[in-house]
Image (cartoon, rainbow, N blue to C red; front, side, top):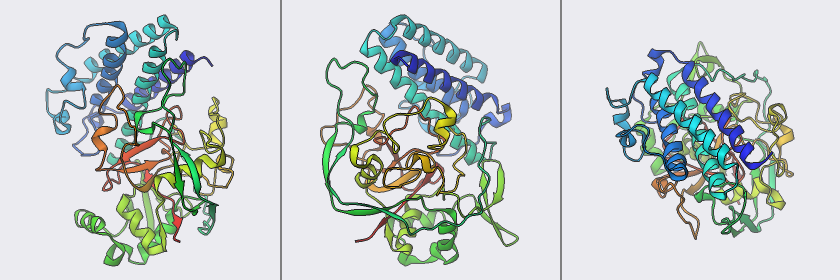
Length: 434
């Protein structure tokens, strides 16, 4: 597939999924209550359109603003988060969708007219589509937060009932490993897209380490819960102790014991806890406390990247190609919100690394010990706030979740989440100590 065709294909998929996520909610559901980790869906639509308009249409097409006076509403760096709920600030759904449709129609026309002849158009096209894909995921975890139905195209895996052997580790001998993505050379044509936080590539020397082949499962985390893990001060760091004061519960979010049976809420459905499914919606502090209880530790982000890129610095855990066929991709990883991260942690063996690590892409964002910081030689991209606002205050997560778009994810991709957060699709795997 030619680069321009690939961009337009990804744009059309992102467009269809955004419309599905918005149109499947009624007017009452669209008026979401205020929550610090989500945005009103109608604002998300306008924000996505603004990004296309501002960074592509105005820059390459030289057009005037389509909604004069609304830049400060649609620009996330300008409008305070709480104000996105204020009456009269965000236009209504009909007005916003009309703006969005016009912007996407003009984006398609501009890209088709350019026909990929300029590197700048290819780069900007990839950038604005990738940005929309990021917001698809936030719209999906909004549904989880509020107990709304799962995305209309999703089909949950059935619970397996299997137990998981937590003892299997993959061993890495350490030494120099390649991290990140080389910064594109001036004049490079049709290079693989990456964000500024993945650049520039460098070599990191690691000590030998052993990392678990599977994510921590709900069954493994349940053992911690039933051992009183949430109420044992020795398992919680200072940061974790403060977090526990804010959220004084004794189990993960969305878990509940009903008539002696543990249940989990996934979107609008409550089902018995499947011990083989991955443990999701965990804060960094919960992952850290579980590790202390289990005598394990979280990986640093360089260990995680070394494990998923293996010996040959591959782009994906299984190799260097992403299947274009959805069915083929579904055998490798849970992405695009198709199966909701409910496969057993020992499933999807076709997508394993050569060393046998499973589900390192898709399923959940994996916590690492590292603060989210720029690499040496970092150079800010065209959108100055894509990475910089989170530097120093957030933790680095890796791997993407089941709600991450397949066109967006790769082994080098870095995402920032505040360690307090558990509303996003976060989980973890562990390393042996020593």
